Length: 341
Image (cartoon, rainbow, N blue to C red):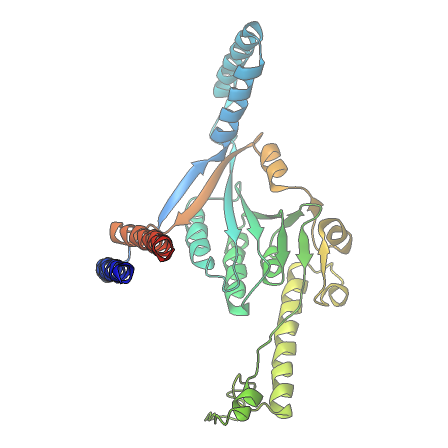
């Protein structure tokens, strides 16, 4: 009886603590949601400086003192000569680097549009934009908008290069094909020019359990296939027609941007690795983004452009509080296990 009393008292205290903590977190989350959403901020980083710092660090670590002094003298002499020769017209052009790691819903396009808009306010025809693209595709409208954002760069007469180190498939390739030049790592996944749609249907399960489902529409094809209703052959046929229409738009878009492609050969929904994609004309060169940047650093000033949405203090505190709740619950559970023993 004494054990049960102590165990019950412990559970009561634990429940009280957890409820109080959850109420506090709920208040914080509510405060965060009421606060005006803070806009994102642009982060501009000089990749050229980072590469120079890395090179300098290695030189100081690996060279002997005499070698290092000699190198420093040569560098100072070269810097003076370059400064004398440099005019406004022969200054290094700029390479702006954007990273796009796309998800299925392509919500990253919100940041992409801000990054491109920022670049276009300052870039000119001497400059270049490199997009390090990673995406296995997703919703048509999201990736269609992402491709249109990239088209803005070309419309301004600025060179656009896209580098694929891992994957640019389906919607990812829809974006990639817009570029003046597409780079691919040897084993990167490229292609998948096709359209996929799938959904479960629980109608038989509902019928088996005597559950009725009603769906009312206005318009013959307002809803072609449904998750809970009984699908018809007519609805399935219309759904397939819509998929074929989207696939046709996809093929036309790729063909317009890369007219040399045998579109019927590559638009089968298949994907290929980089080396084969080069043979098929889906990419222009086998090269990683890292090698491209090292080469470009010789005659470009390279800048990374990133648009990041900042969380306010209440949101950060709310996330930290939620983590605290999770850790506390775990400790309480572990303690209850010890008491039970």
